[in-house]
Amino acid sequence: MAAQARASHILVKTEDQANQIMKRLTDGEEFDKVARRFSSCPSGKNGGDLGWFGKGMMVPEFEKIAFEEEVGKVVGPVKTQFGYHVIKVTGKK
Image (tube, rainbow, N blue to C red; front, side, top):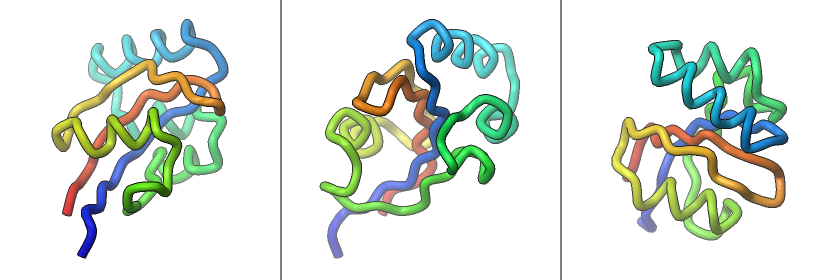
């Protein structure tokens, strides 16, 4: 079985918004609640959960974080063609 990762994210339009999201999370707000409130991605209604995915299924900048960072780590802002992401790695197998 090929390697898979699971991640949640919060997608916003600007780097400034992503930095504000990171501050909220660092101050102790729950990732899923912040995602529901601020993410422009449809996954926001699920707390930002994108489910399991293999290599090649996400844009390279996102995939790099998902497969290289440790589970539980929150990283951001990460710029992609879609905007700025705050990414939380939630699993690997």
